[in-house]
Amino acid sequence: MPMSPRKRAQAFRGVQYGILVLVVAAVAFFADWGTLGNAFFNLEAMSTQFPGIITTALVNTIIYTGLGFALGLAVGLVLALMKLSPVAPYRWIATAYIEFFRGVPALLVFIALGFGVPLAFQIQFDTYSTAAIALGLVGSAYIAETLRAGIQAVPKGQVEAARSLGMSQSRATFTVVIPQAFRIILPPLTNELILLTKDSSLIYLLGLLGTEYELAKFGREGMNATNSMSPILLAGLCYLLITVPLGYLSRYLERRAGRKRDEGLEVTA
Amino acid sequence: MSADTGDAPAASGGPIVEITGLHKAFGMLEVLKGIDVSVERGEVVCIIGPSGSGKSTLLRCVNLLEEPNSGRVVVNGFELTDPDVDIDKARRSIGMVFQAFNLFGHLSVLDNLTVAQRKVLKREQGEAERIARENLEKVGLAEKAGAMPEQLSGGQQQRVAIARALSMQPAVMLFDEPTSALDPELVGDVLGVMRQLAHEGMTMLVVTHEMQFAREVADKVLFMDGGVIVESGPPSKVIADPVEDRTKTFLSRVLNPVHASEVE
Image (tube, rainbow over all chains, first blue to last red; front, side, top):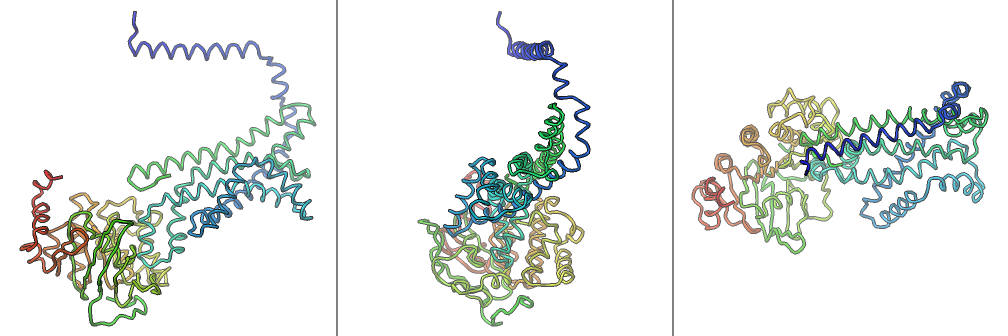
């Protein structure tokens, strides 16, 4: 007997629920809950992590990320303007930079900056500077592309209006275009901040003092000390403490931009 | 009206806008094929013609948003076609109103009106605000000073755009199809403001499809087609009693909307 489309859709959804129930039941049955709980949810091991995981590690992660993001934003803006420059060599340099740092693993940038540069130039930055520069280099490549798209998404008429009021090209860019470009790219920019937060875990490569520990390193040390995975899980939860609110912020901003678009404002992100 | 717009080398006598032998091409497409126009101080000139005739391009050459290929454009004493002209300074005395309003979306209405006064004319915040509020009053939107552009109707946005241009106290105002993007019921308010400006003696160049407005307000009407000025003169001639066939055809289409909609 042939099924109607609606019947078929219902049957298909039934199968999907069935698979879900099977998988959940299998996990519940086969998993060794005692060992798992002991390894990941050992409250005693977790409690030894406080307050350092907040006062040192979480704070350091925020500082490293904040510094890197600030630097990335500044360099990214310069790169974006270079990429839109009428001077061809500026465009080439910006393109090469962006392609390089976007394509190379952040891990390599950290190693190069932490060990290669001090070796080659006989200079040693402190941890915070090295972390900020490394995260800034990686972040700026992504931010530059986002900013360039944002700048190009500002309608041409905005520049024409500014120029017809007697503003110079650069005055129009900084007074009229860039503020509106930022409004357009706030959601993707928030995503880049989230990515950078996670990349800050690579800072452990630089070799850190106890007071310089960020979340990932702190969690690993705690793991060794307590012989349990729980500190790592706790560190992971602390990352979520930063990234989940940022994600909500990003979606909120996206909704706001979307509403503007619906109201007929020319926002093309 | 040219006071406060800086050290314009303008002489008070003679035309305020003088265009001679203007040519403009986009690549292979020749849009303006030799235009001569002169506009006297206080004159209202309406430019009419079918779309693609080059009227917007002509207007945009008057403040160099489009760069002419050849010919001479002199506005308020500035020779815009001179490569050494300080274009930013010249534009201070040329107000422009766009079809798409182009209000700055990130600024309030008041800031839209003060930003260029402060950054270009270096006026104090207080003085800039006073002038801005005067002009908002003039376009009937004094109570919208704190609003954001997106909260306004199209007609209100366009009136704010006019007030923004007026706040620079320009010597001449350019209007590029200022009512073409508006819902029909909002056109009247904008035309009302423009009519009032004309009565106050503002020099205006208006690209428009509003024949009624051109007939009532214009001192001179230019009919353009195919990149040339086909016919020019007072509206009583060009609109009411055209000589050229192309003008007659165009007007019969615009003035007879039923027929026009059949054509389109």
